[in-house]
Image 1: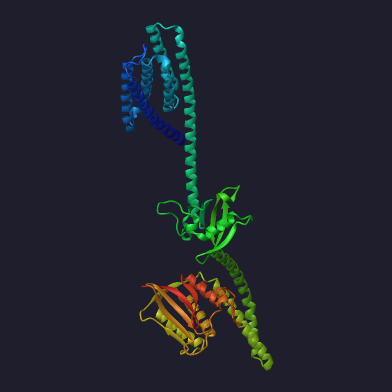
Image 2: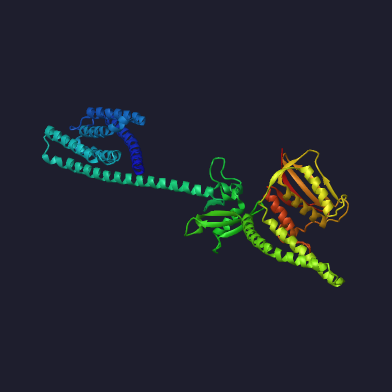
Amino acid sequence: MLNQHLNSQSELSLQARTIRIINVFRLILSLIFVLFSLYIGQKNWGEMQDASLFFSLSLAYSLFSFTLLIVAPLRSSALVFFNPVQIIIDILFIIAIMHAAGGIQSGLGLLLIITIVTASLISNGRLALFYAAIATIGLLLEQSYRIAKWDLPVSGYSQPVMLSLSCFATAWLGYSFAKRILQSEALASARGVDLANLAQVNALITEEMQDSVIVIDQHLNIRHHNSAAMPLLSVTQNDDGETVKLNDSAIEIAHAFTRWMHADTAGEHLIISINNKELKLRFEPISRDSRLHGAVVFIQDWSQIQSAAQQSKLAALGRLTANIAHEIRNPLSAISHATQLLQEENFGAQNNRMLQITADNIQRIDKIIKDVLELNRRDRTNQERLALNQFILDFYTQFCAVEKLPESHFQINLPKDALFVTYDQRHLMQILWNLCKNGWEHSHKQVGSLQLNCTKNGRAGLNLEVIDDGEGVAEENRSKLFEPFYTTKTTGNGLGLYISRELAEANSSRLKYQKLDSGSAFILQLQTIN
């Protein structure tokens, strides 16, 4: 059905173009005849020529041509069926004008060949031989009439016969040519539909990709891009809708593409930085023969790849350490119980000191096991509506009591308005406890050395700021601050800040570090509710 539809469309397109050409040709030819008749005049015609008949036929032919040229744009279905009649009238007019101009000797009979060729294209070659037969009959009748009227020899048929054979040959060639044109147009239309469908499929695939995709030609013009690439491109189209150059939209990618295009090495992956993001670029040439014809650029967020890889490793590590922790706890409990029993005996100061060291390290190992097991509970959130001011007051009282911290050294600042958040109470308690304990350990341990501030951030935003007056984190260590098992303390296990960030993300909040002029701050960003 599709091929039939394409064939019919091709036929209509070819017919429309050919009809316009033959209408213009007919009008020009008729006007030439009229002007020629007026230029020659009535006295310069020969004995076997009829000047008045030639002028009358030329004038009638021009009126006929002008009428068809006007009504042709109406695109009426009747005009399509009238096309064969038009060609027959053209043939008759040409033969009649040829007769008035002196017969086959005038040379006007050659116009029949042009008429038959264009008529063959209009009818797609189907009526080409029929038109040739009409022209042959007309030529022979005209020659017979001339022989009978002027008593010419019978050998005068040779020229009309040769012209008739030329008409048939031309008709056959026109038929073959029209058939080949239709096949070529149908094939081109089918290929066009296939290419359009393929382009739509490619656009759909690239649009669903998470990676950014940009198609660049050899002149650095952006031919295509998906929605994921929009944040990387400052300009995607000019005001007039034309595509723009990559240099005007993403200069870093343009430079990387230029280096890749002229590189002799086989490397196809590059790492660049755009808007403080590390991006991994992979170039695939459009042509297998050369890189100079353009490329498809696949862009990935390198930081996300690294983060995903790290999360995968940590997840595997978490499962492994959780299993190990469960296996360690049983013998560790036995060792702890035996140590407590030994401490009840009097073995002397030196032995008691050794037993105390053993007990301290048992507690340290137990604390690490608890932290490791807590990592696997980050997704088990039990969020509830919390009155933040009351929660912080309860936390403040409990923290100062447990950690034996003077209240004057730890200050809190709460807003006057009652604020409510949705959070896992146990997680929020552990996050604040880790942050405040970490801040106190690194502070100068003076009055006001540790602060917990609650400030609004926009309409629904809220910041919990744990501020200490310590030396802060060195710049070279800030990137590792939230990594597991990273610590600058001799007694720490490096899991406190990492667990705090993981629990914050599990509750749809964010924990970040900020260096202050004197000291440092850890900021927990929350969202308030009514």
